[in-house]
Image 1 (tube, rainbow, N blue to C red):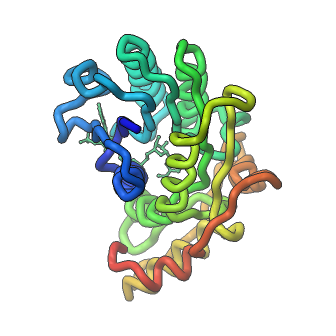
Image 2: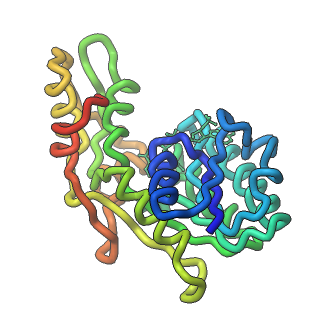
Length: 253
Ligand SMILES: NC(=O)c1ccc[n+]([C@@H]2O[C@H](COP(=O)([O-])OP(=O)(O)OC[C@H]3O[C@@H](n4cnc5c(N)ncnc54)[C@H](OP(=O)(O)O)[C@@H]3O)[C@@H](O)[C@H]2O)c1
């Protein structure tokens, strides 16, 4: 099967490419570095020639609500339109578990992403994932002020993006049928406290930084993520390793 992967060089996209290639599929990698831009449309029609399925793992540079919403709605519109011109039969989108009640930031932008995709003519399958293991390091970078790291209080069932890619590939190659749009969840093996995980990361780096959990009592999204709104439902696929195990085996911290 000929399958295009948008965001092919990203944290999850690179695993999707590798798994599809291992499975004997013809993969069309799409990212700006590879000459395909899902925002301007540059290279998109040529890349999608003969493609049956698109896996969308692209994301823009900003985690803010406005720019992220703009990125996802424009990208979804372009992928749906160019995909329809090329005869694409399915789009598989990676999203985030628990986003429905979020009103701000990146999580709310992902709601707009899902809606924009579902508004197109090509059938869409949505894979909602928990936060990736690598996100802990990003929170540490974003929250470091002097010798203190301020990390949002959050319950999260951190997952290896390789496991997310496995589910994306399953959805891409699954036979037609069943209810459309199908939506599945993939998360790690257990719920974690993000502040504790940031402390583990700092300890592995042998750093003297002190980690402090923060939350804004006036922010409804902060209350949501603190109370477990980002945790998976009972039907979610769960896959290891835990963050602690992943940390012990990775050099990328
Ligand atoms: N990170 C998490 O914890 C997490 C959790 C759940 C779901 N997700 C979802 O997973 C998806 C991927 O996240 P990620 O963390 O893997 O992203 P990432 O590592 O930041 O990768 C983003 C990818 O998008 C490509 N890209 C950016 N702008 C583009 C454009 N205009 N045209 C074409 N490609 C473009 C990038 O390549 P170029 O820069 O070369 O274009 C790169 O390949 C996102 O939809 C995100 O919402 C992430």
